[in-house]
Image (cartoon, rainbow, N blue to C red):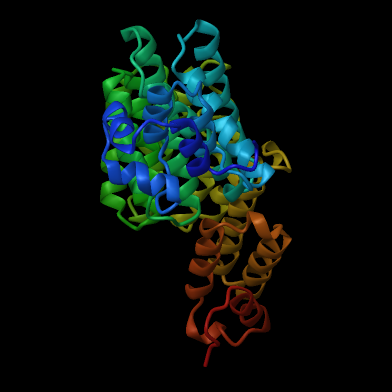
Length: 390
């Protein structure tokens, strides 16, 4: 009878068996059985499983506990999917299963270049639920190491996504990623996580900490061709540039060029898990922007804009904001403010991440008091919801 509640079915199946005897068979209290039958208590899956076994109900009580009558079809579908996922997670892992996980993570890495962060976060959370279910089961050491490496890379992507959303939870995911990579004895992935985490400190204004983690990433890479090496060196350069250290900036940029040249074609890709010439031009341009060397910055910015595809809205906008900063520092405050305003407004709403708005606000507040009455500057501040000047 599909309209029966859990309690009604339990009472019917109990038949002439006493509440005391059923409680003893299910290893629970009499009150629990009575409360379930009267509806004063809702069944857990574990309790439903124990009662189902005690009464030989062939899964009927378990199904009712997981899919109560009246549950919307969408909720039933979600519960059914979760149950199937748990069942599959308990099965043996094959090479094809591991390859599929690594493909999924690589796809997420590429998606960081064009998908809005909030959309990407939803998919990352769903995949993490499935991966956690797999890690809850025992596996052969080699298989577990590959799963842990996948967990480390997925944790890094999660942290990077939360960083762009200005969510403080990013810091917890860096720690999770480092722990998973360490357990997997996966030095390249551990180095990559340190390199990405350095960006967290850089955007938080901790330049010394950013350099420390970038150097740590390069040390873990050990001089081998490695994405972490190519990623960390330009971040180190940007942190040095922000601190006004020109010699150290140039040295780090030289190392970045060498590291990029040594990468395999597979690693030289537009992805958070890879590094390519477009990214190096962007990062080099940002470093020269921070040093107020506009001519060098402009050349790198132009090259980056030529290399980046149109769908990479985030990095292209950041490059334009660097260009706006160069215009402002060269004395054309109006043109700089106008370019910054146009760049932000050209972005679809879902792509206006906290990182983009932070960089635009940083530019707006750097305008001297004497220039804040310019119409272009006033419009920029209004777009960014900054207090009016004067």
